[in-house]
Length: 194
Image (cartoon, rainbow, N blue to C red; front, side):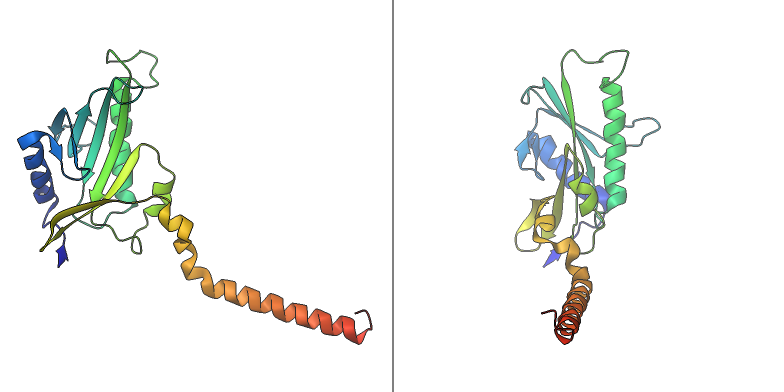
């Protein structure tokens, strides 16, 4: 039997307990060098967790802003995470005229995690058009315990699931075109044009 965490704080407490023990982030199943909980960013809000890692590709450091939810993930949650990421990018000086606040190149990424059902969500279209953000479906299973799975931002799009509700319209259009083609052929035949 699958269920959600009873509250966002319960989910956050579970994740932070793993981070406290060994810097292990159970959602991505990765270790991080440092982490911060409930850091207030004036005028922007309070992200649940900020992860810090050293050298990542061409960057000297990487911050990952994490927003956890115990309700079905939606576009509002993605907007919230985007707001935190924007604030953090502004703080570290990305694109700022006054220069950078850190001694090296820093990357800011985001993770949104919580219960997710692609058939109920208004999130997938927006997610497809994001960069530097990952979404994870998170749940607790009575038999298997905590589970997280990366949501593929292209999978639903490639399968055409976004158009499934339009299949009746497609069929009506195809029927209309077929009927018109038959009518046109009959008209041409009766005039001796075919």
